[in-house]
Image 1 (cartoon, helix red, strand yellow):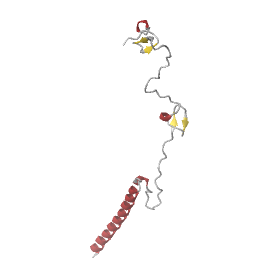
Image 2 (tube, one colour; image 1 turned 60 degrees about the horizontal axis):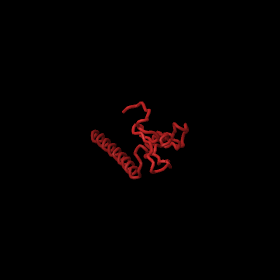
Image 3 (cartoon, one colour; image 1 turned 30 degrees about the horizontal axis):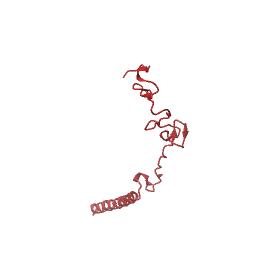
Length: 121
């Protein structure tokens, strides 16, 4: 009879633990449906433990402006972007006249044979 009482106590304890775990599982499933992670829930069982606090997100900092919380370095408004295409010509000369162009420098303004560029490719 003593062995029967111990077995019954073990079964009751296991059923209680099973019910507690089912309750936690339902809470986690409800949190997932609401878009929350289980780590964002209050992870304590009422035993005097404090809830887990989330770390705040890192602050924005701009290395160029040397300022916090306004924008990131990649989004800095003073950072000049290189245009995808070269700027339009501002030459307003005679269109029948041939403009000097250098094949070495790839710029207008002087001829290839008068280029003083020391680099060879």
